Amino acid sequence: MRVVHLYDGHEKVYDGRGSVPNVVWHLARETAAAGHEVTVLERRWAGLPAAEEREGVAFHRFDLATGADEPWTRVPYEMVTSPVGLARLVGDRTNFALEALRHLRSLDFDLLHVHLPFAASVLATVAPWLRDRMVYTAHLGELRLDALSDDQKGGDGGRGDADGGDGESADGGLAVPEIVKRLSPDVYLANRAEKTAVLNPEIREVFADRGVPDSKLSVVPNGVDLNRFGDPDHEVVTEVEAKYDLGDRPTLLFVGTVMPRKGVVDLVRAVEQVAASGHDPRLVVAGENDLDPAYTDRVRSLIREAGLEEHVELTGFVPSEELPALYALADVFVAPSLEEGFGMTVAEAMAAGTPVVGTRVGRVPWLLDDERCGRVVEPGDADAFASAVSELLDDPAERDRMAERARERARDVSWEGVTEDVRSIYQEVTE
Image 1 (cartoon, one colour):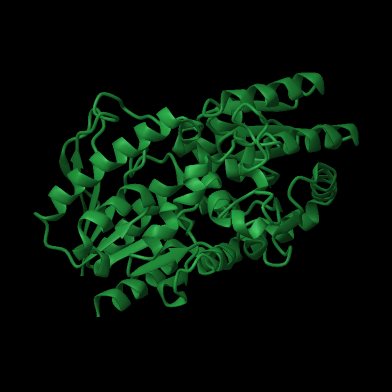
Image 2: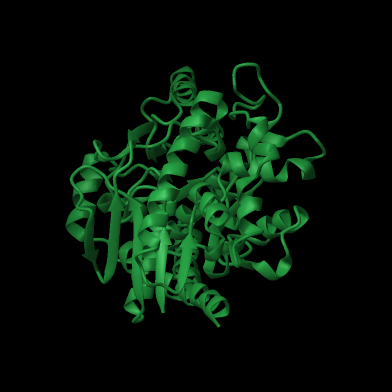
């Protein structure tokens, strides 16, 4: 089988940054390892060749206005909330689609796997011959999921409809522009692609409620690299322990971008309670914190006001090679998200044998297997989150039991198994 993956985002595939390019890379690599011919189409970044092969995967890259002169970048979080920003995004993705189409016409392939809806929707419109060989994985993010499910929220709009007057929703999230709500690229593409994979049954239901035929939809979770997270390099573990001054204090770890839907404000409030209860926690917030500066400023202010400077560290971007060590060193992994499609960092922590306190969003409760591998609380409930963390810190024996169960559970979402599920979809499309 000859498979082409299309990724039009603002991160590199095979870079260790960003959950979606991570998914693209693992699916491509595992499919190639199974003996199939795999190509990835992406934008070219400074320092990267237009074509190369990595671990059996062919990369074809093309120059666009965003990317060619930069080693790496991201679209500002608020881009699509302004008309100018939205116009820039549409222009970029349209140019990407036209360049991709030029490459696709020169390739001999059986199936096109797309991972974001914008450029792929353009392709499905201008090149309808691609539709019957197109598979779409809906990596639904906060803004797009709000737009999709707005009708199911009784008109309230959840995080994206209660406008705070400055582009923010009433709870601190960013408002979803009306045009995105009305013209959902996800629904448009899912109705035109031959098959669409979603991360959980709830997203499948949202698509079905918006008119996407059930026969087009399949639930496929994301995966986790068991070897990478289950067996970190011991020298790196020692270096990371010293770098982040973890010492003998109980370590709480958060991995992800500091942004509203990740619930970092709730996490800081919970840590304040954990510290007040007699524990001496050290919370490491490992992830970029410059994507939504206003929200990060709010988090920093809360840390100062609560006197938590000695308890909380915002690291900024963490190199991918340090993450397995951080997971292994943590006593408890904390995932206070208000929204998730899957919960990839939860799965990574489980593969490392670290118990988790998470929220009842996305596939997190399913991953934690009825709390056999951690604790689950309602999103936004800082009090319950603090209680769950304190409970685990007070019971090392239970943490050890959870660690073993977490490692075992993580095997259910290995990339090898997930890729087999995806290849089953490929077979349906190509038969």
